[in-house]
Image (cartoon, rainbow, N blue to C red; front, side, top):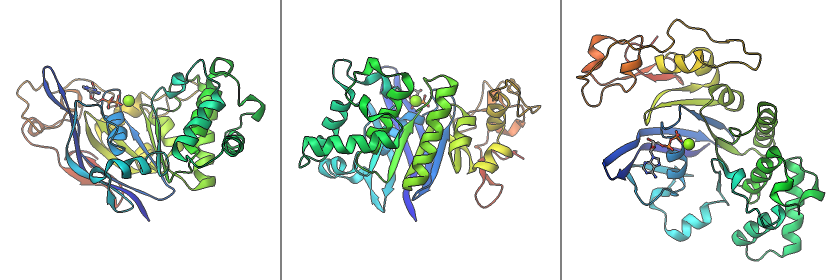
Length: 320
Ligand SMILES: Nc1ncnc2c1ncn2[C@@H]1O[C@H](COP(=O)(O)OP(=O)(O)O)[C@@H](O)[C@H]1O
Ligand SMILES: [Mg+2]
């Protein structure tokens, strides 16, 4: 069953120097209980998509077009009251760098209890505390640590407590924005295992945002690769991670290292400049200046979607 269907979403930021399109005509769907990874380098628009889905964008952002259908209703048309009911209870978000945003002078458990009671004003403090105990068991933090201060937690614990908070209203969907990025590799691995286990056990859908394609492939059923605000390749994990076709995805994979430092995916097309197109026409491929597979027509013609399989497609006329 389709839980979330995003159609032709475009989001721009107004800045002093003009308008910049951060998300350009993005469409995707996510089924109940499935996980979708959004991967791409810093600045490609991942966080803007996540924030846009929940209408949490800053004031200078403008949703130019699109629809965000959650169980069939368009979030972009929701009233403030409907949004309040949606956020946390149905879709919760783990914000980028959230684990550093715990209030340092308030005990972690109190912060979670407060959040639970904001979203469920009828619940007593004792009942909310029992809830926190259950959540801590889910994310493997000893319950005798609930009322410690944030500085008494390790980085991994702080992040697991954030995950606990995201789970507190039993949402249908969690948007996790770089949830393991600030952690060292061992702790990163534990967090990823935890997220995978929770996703499976509670049948929660996840949108997992990361700049690291290895992490995304570890967690997600489907992968969407972004470059300069556009999706350039999308498909099942096996398709995109094992048999990528877009030159940008190939370059992402060629710079992906395993924990042993062994280059797992080596391809001849590591990024290097080829066609330097000073006269590149608007709407043409953003990856052109770095594309080792570019053809002369790429400088004048818009890229086209090419279907590789029923589920795998890439925004490039020459990909193979
Ligand atoms: N509040 C903002 N005002 C103006 N530009 C922004 C703002 N937030 C993000 N951007 C720009 O939008 C683009 C996408 O940013 P972002 O969604 O944060 O990317 P990512 O999460 O992939 O690193 C970048 O070029 C970034 O500089
Ligand atoms: Mg980001």
